[in-house]
Image 1 (tube, rainbow, N blue to C red):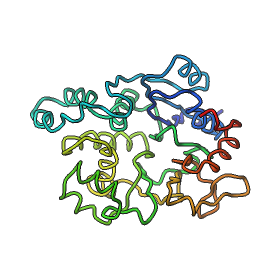
Image 2: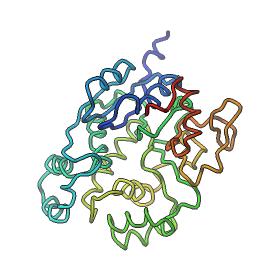
Image 3: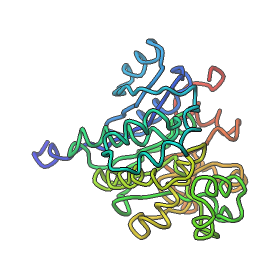
Amino acid sequence: MSASVNAIKPDLVIGAVRGYKFEQLRPFVVSLKRSGFQGDLVFLWNSLADETRAELERHGAKLVHFDYRGSGSLNSWSRFWSQIRPLLRLPVGNSFRTAVYKKILNLAFVRYLHALDFLEQNRGRYRNVFLTDVRDVIFQDDPFCDQLPGDMAAFLEEPHMRYGHEPMNDGWLLENYGPEMTAKLKDARISCCGTVMGTEAGMVRYLRAFVAEILRLRSVAHGADTSVHNVLLHERLSGKISVIENFQGAVGTVNSDALDKLTVGASGLVVGIDKRVVPVLHQYDRDLKLAAGLVERLTGSSTKSN
């Protein structure tokens, strides 16, 4: 092997897990391993049984523990945000703010802070980074099989999913940001925050912007992570994030609106409009029959134990 090949930095797939058994994570772990992906898999973890951690490590995952005081996906201290936020806007220092964020943010939100910590502690180690949900993600191919379209890439939901027309996302945005931002984003396409991809430098910039955005929030309740992601995409980092249509790049989000449009190729795998296999399927378990077939084909195991 040449020196130039040896010098290529590995890619990284990173996600946060809490409270899962290995069987719930098996589709993600095994399908990634069989996809041809040659980089590092890192799990930021909290509250995993010893046997689960042992199985993850046996499958090649690197485990990085993080503290979390919430109960499950919720953190009851989030309700104090309106009282805490004015204090954090004083010149208290970023390290103090971050320490408070880690104590009061919910699980879906706090993972971004720990992902940033990991990347900054390992700065210069990785080439490309895929920050992703875990339990409902399965890999049909190496997520980095194609060249990235830019330093950062975000993946859209279905075309009709736009702010001003989606009550759940609209409610989150209004609660987290208020009416002014809600009006600004009216009719903007909605991007799923559960799968983002970029170069190492691009992902660090995105995550730093993500953390800086927290002080702007009126609420850090459920859905705040989705609201921040879309505000970054359409406002703060507009033009700096490549926007990819659903099933036309590395990721396909199999939400209920996309189920009728799915195309399964001769291989039994889901393909995009170009008839190429979509490397990553997010929320693939929305269709139980599809999920069972994919898990069997990509991991050689059934879903009945999940």
